[in-house]
Image (cartoon, rainbow, N blue to C red; front, side, top):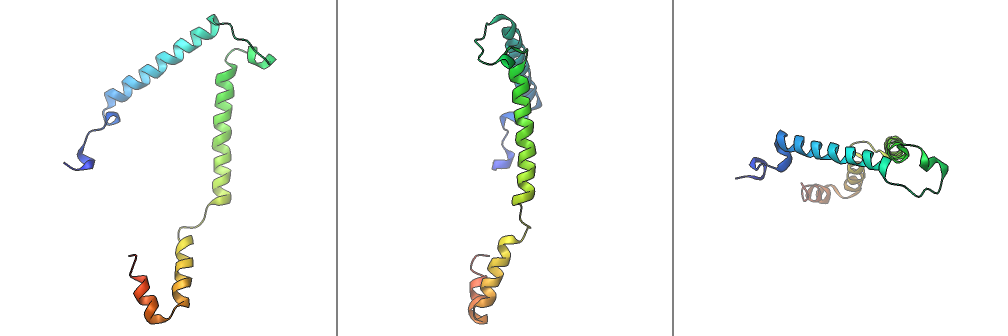
Amino acid sequence: MSHSDSNHFFDKPANVKRLMLAFYICCGILIVLDFVIHRHTYHPLERVWAFYPIYGFIGCVALVVIAKWMRVVLMRDENYYDRDEEQRLDAMSPAHAQEDHHVGH
């Protein structure tokens, strides 16, 4: 049996539904507890209902936006590293370059 033939836990839709149901139940419990448990706040904004979920959502959106910006700044074209290898091989003697070129491929 190959690795691709094996069944994983999340391959079954019923397991994914069970996990999502568990997450929804946990979220519901936390919402109810937000009304019951007294929190010791340090900043007035913390007293706002659902402050932490809103704060977390804004933080996640900010991370995605920053990551997209970083991708534009840091991304290189597909053959970025291959160009350096080709330049190195071109600088070598033709016989040696041919021999070295086939070593890693």
